Structure formats: structure tokens, C-alpha cells
Image (tube, rainbow, N blue to C red; front, top):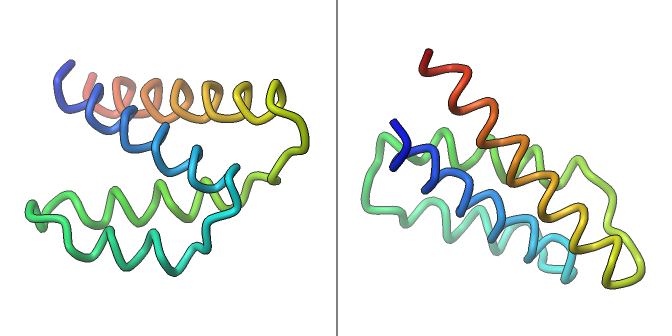
Length: 83
């Protein structure tokens, strides 16, 4: 459980980092579709959609806070779902 939730948290961190950097959502969704573990694709899509529902912030401190908060929130939900 810890390993998979850590992986999901890492994905959430990466997606939000790209989101805060101004990456286009379609680029990230295209990358998600190429994930080898097909069972993981719906989770990854949900993470991308959730990330793009959060505003893009100005200022490095606010961006880093958004990245950290998002990754932690996704991990909390992962652990809660697996109890």
C-alpha cells in the first residue's frame, strides 16, 4: 500500500509541477495514455483533471506550496481508500 500511494503521490507532484509551469493539459493526458500499467491510467487521468482544477499561481513560493499541498492531498486520499 505504501509503495503504490508513494507512486501516486509522486505522479501528483509531477503533474502539479507541470501544471504550475504552464504545461498544456493535453500534453499530460497524452503522456498518461502511454503508461504501461493500463490499470493505472484512470487514476492518472483523475489526478490530471484534479490538478487542472487548481489555479496556476504567480510566485515560486505559492507554486511550491500548491505542488506540495496537491501531492499530499492525493496521498491522503490514496491511503484512506485503502483502509
